[in-house]
Amino acid sequence: MAKGFLYLAAVLDWHSRYGLSWQLSSTLDVGFRLLALRDALRVDPAPYIFHSDQDSRFT
Image (cartoon, rainbow, N blue to C red; front, side, top):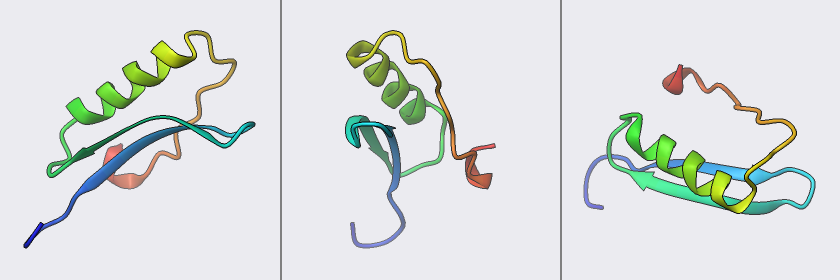
């Protein structure tokens, strides 16, 4: 990408350190974050805890 930023939304399993899903976007809209979450829930449909780092850009 010549100019601008790319934003990463990643969902990780902290126990196994396995990446369940990720999405990249050139904007901070909510859509790519929801796609990452939905993809992760397909891999592990019943997580015990879902913790967001609650980055200030996403709140």
